[in-house]
Length: 484
Image (cartoon, rainbow, N blue to C red; front, side, top):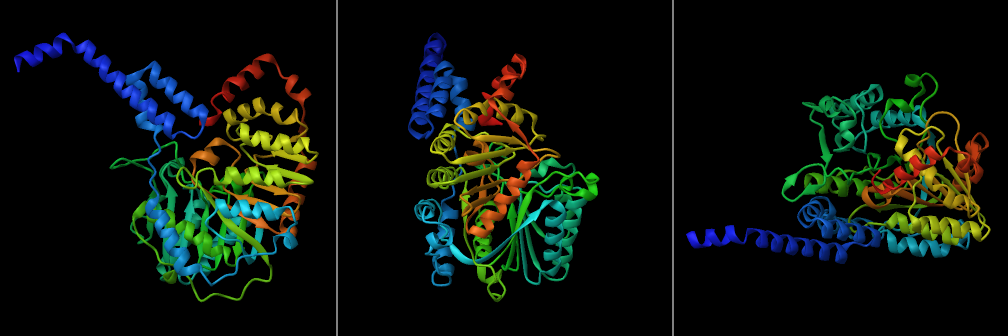
């Protein structure tokens, strides 16, 4: 024992060097073999090589994606096979519904989403919190069997308390209520809204990523989905969180803007499945559709064809990202984008700039007043790349606009929770709705055009007129854009 101790003392430097080299080599090999983005692989390998111990520890801590969704995938496949087959017909006449160019987009979506396109949906835009929260509370008060609610942020403010009280009233009259809130989003309010649900009997869970056997928030991975399903027949989804700042009542006539959506038809069932998957992942409780859906009501008068697109840092990674690429590729006349956080990567920038060079009109609407200052600076640093190719960029007037809308050729639209940034398209769990319908897409396009009429154009000259200090500041912040 004494000899071994003497050996360790004498050669401790060599041993530490050897262990550090081995650990660093293993981390570097793992990064090179598993990272899909070459820039991420190069960055991690560089960190590990320059600092074997610390770099390997850092990579081990935050660089490895430990989200294991195999159980969710099995649950998903079971539900699809057992509940969906034969109940709804997949929409076939995409060319007739939206346009011939969207046939190939449908094929791309079929490879990216496990959900089929179903017709007989009614999707109604709700402008701002004044319309959305009123409709949501009315729906909760009308529930007779089940309520499934999921949100990234559920603030403990005036609106949050009203919705919480409506959920409590529903539970008291015998409705099954389950509420799922992201663990990071729940911290936006102090105290958390969860305190209101204590001792009410309502099942409330926090969506948390798992770090080995310890349950703790993995702050870079968040569930950004917003879903409310009533009796399996009526749903609400989009990009709006539960916050009083979206209501004119609280904000004295100048609330933040957003567009949420009320949904009836088969699409409601797909949204319910998304909730089931997240609830099962979080709580290990398996929910069965038969217990959550009333006898189907008559199909809505509208006949919109749509499906859910889920994405996240698991088997669904880059689903929305790739769908956006495909949509830009099939565009023939006009692309419209409205996003509060417009920080696309080089692949999406290439898709947009290529479309513009093909002669496609590309309009990009971003907020004039952004709630995230650093994101605004990074956005300004990157806009020259789309402007240089002929895209048109606009800054909206008035309060911050949180809307997330994307339309192509007035025949196809993508709405939901995803932003055009790395966080949404690679890190967050998101749910979007792919819509094939001329009337719906045209309506959204007209809404975006109406906002553009009041907006201020951003040109290359606008960017060049900024002071050197501001341009440098924006570029420095832009370097950190994948982490904003």
